[in-house]
Image (tube, rainbow, N blue to C red; front, top):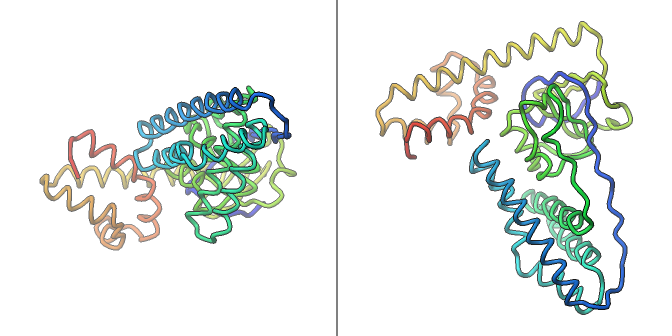
Length: 316
């Protein structure tokens, strides 16, 4: 049994699919026509922005506007004239290829963000490295791993997951996520919770212990991961998963029924007080559930509840 950090609650059971992207080798090459190289960079930048906008739109429709803000943050970085200007200046003044200019400039900003010690800035550093690689892959004509094509019942196993890669996951096919690196507050973990996919991160030695096709069981609430477990362990967690999903459905039914019974103004008060401000004790008392139960399940219903209210035409 491996122990990591719980990132998204729930039980995941399935077959391991190892997702790895080859590390890019970026070399410095002198260019004779700096202006043509700048245009080459602008073309790749435009394609990356378009692909990022598509990811943001997809997340907004599938999950919610709040989660789409993560990819919109990538859009802001890609559209930052200071960042793009420095890359262009590097190409023009140093007469270097744009892949190399992107490497230097984006790493400089990522290192600066990472050194600030602030959690938000740490995430910004991860975002910067993500867009760096995506621009470089576009320039080099390399396709990124398409995690949306993973087969049903997959447990996605990776060294780490970038926000852009996580955004492409199809929750219908991915039963769980396990990574060797990462943290509970990372953008990838936030997206996993929004997609309601059980996830465990920071599992030391994971990549050396798992191979494609291995049976994997994970508990996103406790951070426990089992590789090729005994039949009795898998059965135990199948029962836990069934109970978890049953409890989640019951709470969702209660919340929707409760909202339906309110007048329009009361619906607004309910959502603002009990949902967004997370006044867990009151909900626990009304539902007869434990505070921990309500905390876990209400969090996972956030996006669904917002979508439910929107469909009903209830404006907050």
